[in-house]
Length: 636
Image (cartoon, rainbow, N blue to C red; front, top):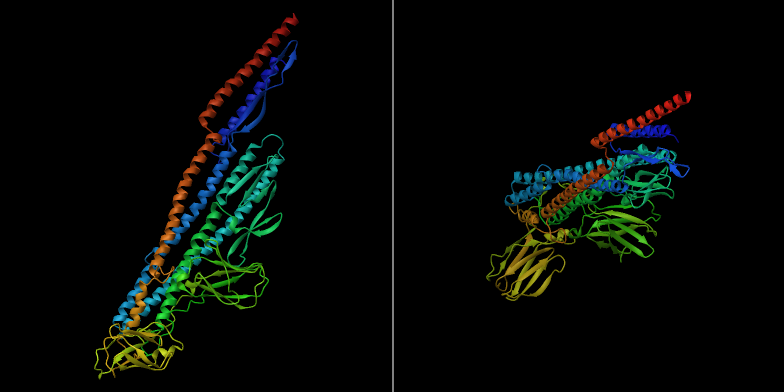
């Protein structure tokens, strides 16, 4: 190899390196571009006489500056940050109508109880009755508005889930196509194609968490979820949207792989898709159920109390609100083979939770799983007899469950939609106590009869209004006459010091003092009690009565707890998203330090390569001069 050829090899090598440097500079603003470098190796030396003489230089390959571990870290942090950011943004949007004065239930609930206290003081006032009814209608409207907000947000989330799944499948197809082009590009690294694939995977990581495995042919396998292969070599598998196992209107995610199609919603995590699923499952569904639980507790307890009062027509009250005892939804699994029809009803409002439940039959029997925390309840009496778990009573209406059948139970998720006033006439507000006490004018003892209160509705309900007479046969005994359960009762012992509490026909009354023989006391219907607001006072008393959450919360405090939970979920997600953004920025900076184009560095490379190129050209020039001198010498 002559010096001329060696100079030519250097000239060509430095020219190619200049081309690479120019490519770097041109792509300084290209997103995802990795800086490239021409790798030089000496040409194979030639043995002449007693030594090896070099044959110049050659470009072995053009290598990109790349660290797959740094890039994988960036993808992972991006997926986590995007998921938390999605939850934070959606939680903020949900929290706004829950807490805003114009849409929150807190103000409407407070106004409802305030109106009851006002009408309790003037139950005969028609305008006060109308005002109380109006406040109730306002509460119902507020509940329906909030429920509409829930449904609108759910529809948006469902639409975004569908769109995101389509984007994931499209990206998978593009990655598989780039894999194919890389696999057929030969042995030299296809740097621009590799960058293109990394950009696509980076976009994919913002949609869902990904894991990658490099293959010997240069392709990259991409997995999502709990190991589902989204891309294997040049083949892309697909995600699709379909109806849920229990609710066809609720979109679920299905994965179609080599072994078939299956639901994978619960296995998806990270990225925008994971954030949407987490928000729907962990924030939106419980929030809707919590509002449903609040209004269910309010309606059931208010109805029970309202039925113990008398309306302006002198009749026992009916339901004040729509009866929500049958509000729970029961959705059968699409794969069920049995013909069982399962009913669910509210048996105890104090036991209600914000969770959904899955009822299933397997070879070992029947079980109920609380989906919120995964706790499993073994059912011992169902289906032979009704069984109550967490305040929900399950019963088999007809048919039978086959092994493998399952049902989704949503106790309160639909209650807000069903909530509403059951009366429209203000005169039908049962504000008066149903019975009153009376003392005979001829009594000579010091016995005192308190105001009777209705504590429960008897069977039949009309017995509550049956008149009852208490006649003392001596200072320490009395008879009770009238109709109803336990009546008549004779020779009942009485202690003048301790007094006695009498309970018949659903009412209870306190008797104190020292009645004399022949003294008579009566409990009778509260006919014409237009000025009596005892039942309205009892209804208003539920503002502070702890009837929810195991007897630890009232409707107002339970709703306040919902606001705290949604706010906390949003705040925690926001803090997590901000912290993850710092890690994303760090990972991006690390990647830029490895792969990014530095114009100062490239400018220095240009100067160095220019000098090398000129030196190689000088070698060629000198070799040419030497060859010309040789020719001239020979010519002489």
